[in-house]
Amino acid sequence: MRIRHEKKSIKSAIGWLRTTFRKKNNVKFNELNLSADLLAEIEKAGFVEASPIQEQTIPLALEGKDVIGQAQTGTGKTAAFGLPTLEKIRTEEATIQALVIAPTRELAVQSQEELFRFGRSKGVKVRSVYGGSSIEKQIKALKSGAHIVVGTPGRLLDLIKRKALKLQDIETLILDEADEMLNMGFLEDIEAIISRVPESRQTLLFSATMPDAIKRIGVQFMKEPEHVKIAAKELTTELVDQYYIRVKEQEKFDTMTRLMDVEQPELAIVFGRTKRRVDELTRGLKIRGFRAEGIHGDLDQNKRLRVLRDFKNGNLDVLVATDVAARGLDISGVTHVYNYDIPQDPESYVHRIGRTGRAGKSGQSITFVSPNEMGYLQIIENLTKKRMKGLKPASAEEAFQAKKHVALKKIERDFADETIRANFEKFGKDARKLAAEFTPEELAMYILSLTVQDPDSLPEVEIAREKPLPFKPSGNGFGGKGKGGRGGRRGDDRRDRDRRGNGRRDDFKKGSRGNDRFDKEKRYRKDNKKPRTTSSEKQTGFVIRNKGDK
Image 1: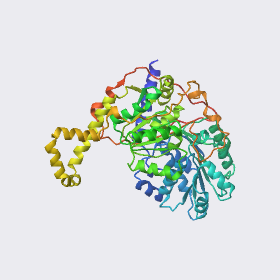
Image 2: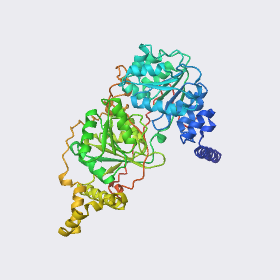
Image 3: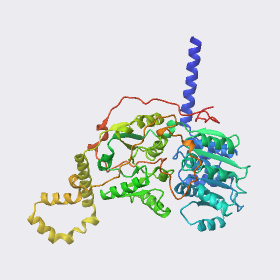
Image 4: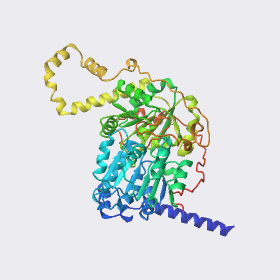
């Protein structure tokens, strides 16, 4: 017994040392056998250490192996498949050597930009193609030369059928966000594209989840793929404070705007379930004085890109989005994520909250749950392995006090600004007249009444009611529906499939705009109930390898 115990102790000590050593010695990009051209661009972008998915995928891909990677957006997947692909490109040959298939226009554009950035020194030409934009212009761009093409399934297939996209020289095929493409009804399109790509290719497939239909792609179209999975604990950042508010459907909007007044988020994303919801929320937030814009599948591409640009540049405070429209977007600096509607599957929740709490910064997510949707919380908690805290809604008085606090701070800042004070004198005569008629206190109160919205006179905002999600717990997640069974529908790049969702990750700028008096830690209800731990991985077709497993 004693010998067995000693062996066990030694084994656990070795395990601890391995883990500690691994944590302290993260792999650097210059240790991954990448060329000087790529390393120069990586360094220019400010990257030094590889993320877990990059650390595991890049060496395998450089060896020419097929890889299946299970990881969320925000873990660095584009570089994970992009760097080894760029490494192989022969720029002296004017042929398309790699094809990347992405679910949405935004993700296609984003991947194209990132691949171009990393491949700039090497001279790699990268083109993006997607629905909602002129196909003629895209054909012209392809004719002018491309080494890598990134595109959405529907538009890629259209270009292939028009013989504008030649696939015979493709050596690397990448499927990004494969589960989302399945959800959007692109399965048939994907299979049609894959069947036209040379069999001698290398295939890299990335997916946040592994429904059976995705596993079948791995079995059918890939050659002895290596399997990499980034463990759940690495997917859900510990830096995101997760809260929920139990609230009736008709009270959601007022509850959310009051909370925003109290929290004063620097950059916030609000997730709505449908396009109509996004439009109504955007209109309502504007009425209440927030700088808000919405994105969904019915907006034209230029409008969507313009909204995202404004949000990234700080010209907007709130981005309202559907899951699909926000899928895969790289937006930094997000301080708060508001789930106006609880997502329709638990993975979408992970994607949504992952938009904040990055790069060592903290962030917050608040989910509004109607009373008969409470059962969904436990399913989400089982996936994230983290308990959500119940949050008491902010009162109208708290919101009013917070608004006053912000207004006073603004007045103080303006008075300290010499350019603003320089304009005072032109009002001198009138100001002195007013000062003779009214007391300083009365004038100050008048200024504040113009600056701060009275909670009793807020404009009414009507948000159409949505039915709560039907709670039918099953092994496949919410609503009793598995993800793998929706593959037959023909997708369309011009519209989002907003019936289901998936969205994701980004940073926090510590706010000077917040008010300590309204610390939410004072308002959450402590709940000691622990989430149940369940195993969601089924061994079907192949085994997913966790980081660190042998």
